[in-house]
Image (tube, rainbow, N blue to C red):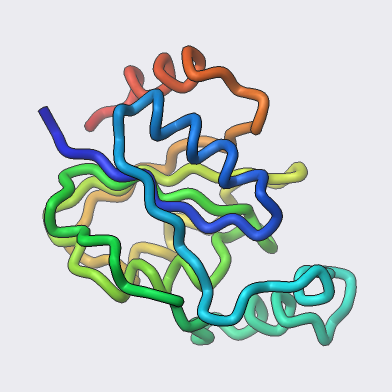
Length: 159
């Protein structure tokens, strides 16, 4: 049986709820990707061109610092990586996370929460951050999805 981790970044709590349900459905360990400097509501105001998240997302080389590096990726075969979609891609903290560990030979299954947009260029933007890993574009998940729904989705994946 493959050892599985659900790693997630949640700015408002929505992705955290989904990740916790997914971890139960996948019988996986859970790890929260946390920025060293937490995001405030003002930081997340995507309408404000000076908001931290807006500035980060317009500079693809920006890498927010992680609070810790305790994920112990080496012991997992499959890592679900979850995040909210920001500007049709993953927040740059996901790049920071992927670049902080060796994912060679691992399978990464992406999942996201979104107010309406899809994955856009997410896979393309993240592939550079985890060379040697197999990335699967998962799906946009809602906080209302049941554990059974998530189990059914997991069964459809090629992992």
